[in-house]
Image (tube, rainbow, N blue to C red):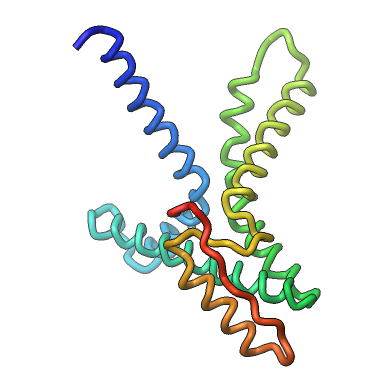
Length: 181
């Protein structure tokens, strides 16, 4: 293997690691919340492999719950019910606010320079942090009738339950997006 092939392979591995870290950052609220839930239930066993797998399972359940609430939101919005704003605020608040604060300090460290004024650094770090929050929002895309294939059953359940509860409601058909997760 020559140097170029080794370089290309290493860059490819680094790129895959960077994409997985970005996904982990996007789904951090789910991991964080599930860690809090599991650690309050399991106490000391959270450091074991069993504790880690339970955290991942609870994270997946929370992921499905987010798409269940998105199904409720889409059904309410399609039926012109103003109440759709409440699940929208819940979903956006849970999934988008924490990642913005999570990247705020690392971005501030990256843009820190002795030649710039502190107000310029604050502006730049907030612009990049909010841009990341917008990216996270578009990963979930709460106002679009679509869900990743793995979350379609929960999403469809949210739509079906809301349709059953509403009187004289318009039936919304759940759509599957191209994303797997």
